[in-house]
Image 1 (cartoon, protein in one colour):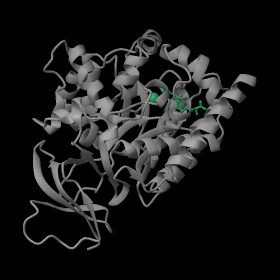
Image 2 (cartoon, rainbow, N blue to C red; image 1 turned 90 degrees about the vertical axis):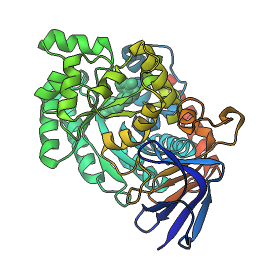
Image 3 (cartoon, rainbow, N blue to C red; image 1 turned 135 degrees about the horizontal axis):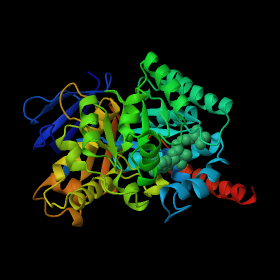
Image 4 (cartoon, rainbow, N blue to C red; image 1 turned 180 degrees about the vertical axis):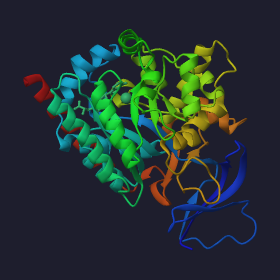
Length: 435
Ligand SMILES: N[C@@H](CCSC[C@H]1O[C@@H](n2cnc3c(=O)[nH]cnc32)[C@H](O)[C@@H]1O)C(=O)O
Ligand SMILES: [Zn+2]
């Protein structure tokens, strides 16, 4: 076996326990061959990763983002969703070139690898360029072209839907199978009903899952209720977008009936606490969603509404906000947010990973616990949720390949990526200002 051994660390197991174990990875298949106590004769390994003083966890899953929006990090802040999109973000996005998107996606990939994220879901445009970055970076992703039809004539709207379906067909299985895809209408209010119906029907026929923003703000829910006399999740079911492989971002303003429907349909929700707080969208009922049996993942959303792609921050925010929303300090405990950031996210995206056990995908992050803010270690799971940050990640492994070793990213040239993105962002702002 062409093995990689992760040795000397403590390992977070699927049942939430932490054991002193070594992890052996079969690099040819990209899977975990065994998790053992390090006694006996270890298989000879071509490569070792030192995990002493560290915690080995499943690679984190960022289940909803717009990765190229790293270029718009800090570009427009302190506004609610609708004016933020219309006045600032969409005009800037109108000037984005495919090269910009590649530069932004590279920056996002670098940031994710450096903070232990190995898989993500991305809704954006120029997705062939994002896919190329995912391939080169060595990450895993579920990608889709985001459709917006408001303000477009029928031909342009239909072309956007067709583009999303074509991208989903063409990119599925790319990067040696690490890339999967979805049909991604932006939301139930920014895409017209006939286009939603047509697109979802075609996606169903092709076996492509659906991902969209749902129940994010009151301003988005109210018009649906007013115009249709039904709530968004009922509308989603009407257009056949509530399937077991589908996953919706946000789910902030969902009532009990909608929670039941999501649970019964097996549709996952991606909780984006930082984005929800920053845009003052509201507090998602995470505790109730989980109790009802809904699969919940965590997402950063784009870097313009977060403003980083660090899933450790998202775990902490999810726990804090979940307690506040439930008015209960025992709600959304540490183990729950760790589960959402790993297994829950992988489940939501229907991608391999999320668990450290024999046969699972070898997607790992090794978190260095030797730091003042992580001392003492009463409970490593508590540290993951409440005290650790992305910069504590020492090594990152995806599909059996080492993407970062001792904080050095091996698949991307960090300095060049940062420079290129900074240049692209500066030129972009110049173009927006003169447009
Ligand atoms: N084809 C569309 C692109 C849609 S991509 C997905 C969109 O989601 C936007 N977005 C980012 N964050 C959020 C959020 O929190 N809620 C809703 N939309 C967001 C993002 O700016 C981007 O325009 C077009 O040509 O405009
Ligand atoms: Zn979003």
